[in-house]
Image (cartoon, rainbow, N blue to C red; front, side, top):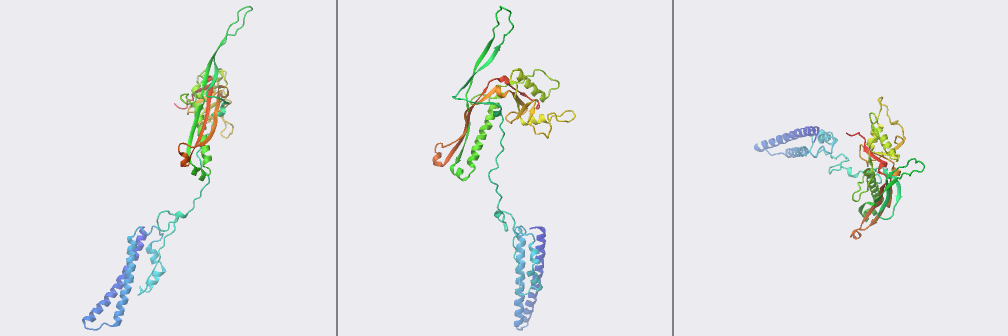
Length: 402
């Protein structure tokens, strides 16, 4: 109960107590008068008895109201929690009480006020709580998690394979002794060196178990599961194409096979933009002109925010909408590459993807799933990556992070 409600109820109790005292004094006076007459041997008249009965009745009515107010004051948790105006204020201001008071708290009269709780949106078990009846606004479908845009597969030349092994012959050396020859002189000899390379397709897979009831009752669940499983394959595929270390069932990725950045010369006050140009030069000197740069979105943002001495952006106009380009080559942003690293290379010439199994979805039963109304949804693919020329890919640090 608030301070205001306590004060109002207390004042009301005091007023009612004063009315009770007044009625009590009247009863006392009649009783003393009756006792005096009895002591003097006089008979008590019927009129005096009627006055005594009336006074007692009026006193009891006021006493009942006084007791009710005392109970309300004691129930501090019941008064005020659901009422905006105090109990005392509402009782004193009621027409019933004012009429009762105007009649001098007459016999047989009473003041009755029904105290009803204010309706609120509360959901607790309290008077006037109607929040459970509110209907929520339910949007259709499911707000899905964000999905990364895959980019690396599109950089590489696609291919198909049969069997469980991919073999190819790689030229690893060429001793070129071609020269001008005098008439009648012996011609110089040259030679080449070949090496056999082989790799095998690797399986990327994952599954999800779901009840048939869930598939039947939630209409969009099957399509959501299929989409998520396929996205999971693509996510892991991108990581393997870049970072697979070639051990176990991992692909041997582009970065694992790439050549370390080794600039042909050191420019004055070398910047990150200079490094990427020198990486292009390194690939070109290996006879594999680069076709693109790969870097983390954070690093590309750093490059784009590079300014000259006059605080002008070097790379381009912030309001422009052109595809990210640097030194005439497209820049591919992906979080699959580490921050502060770059990969520049001849992606079409230097490597190729070979799909053995296209990404697919299958459904089946495991063990006693049939009797449990459970099904397993499986997504898998099988592919190999052939890196023909490691010197076609240049990998190194950008230098943003010490």
